[in-house]
Length: 151
Image (tube, rainbow, N blue to C red; front, side, top):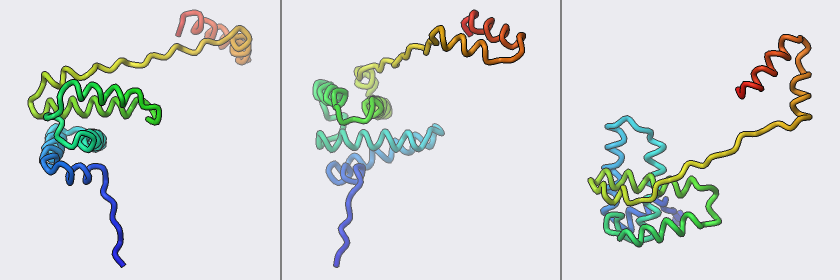
């Protein structure tokens, strides 16, 4: 009985678009030469492989409008666990295009806005509990000074 083997995303992209294997190898060589993270490379190659599978061609052969439509669909995807898949796709494509000397196409990709979170603010009751926690007076004074200074 023959065992059924399944292809990884990257292997599937290699089969679908054989030229992609040479591009992935070139990316790997650059990462080694620059001393960059292997896990980052793996994420980028996986994302670009998904892109290659979707369009059934190399990223440099895809039009800017098609890229933007794909990224919009990816950004709106409710099944995506977080925005990280979108970020990895944008950063991976940007790295890919720069590697091939296509800086204009890399720059045309959307810039990613940093997510900002508001600081946690304690209510009055929580502050009273915080300031009364230390047993020594000097510790209470130091704590209230630190808080009032915004540290």
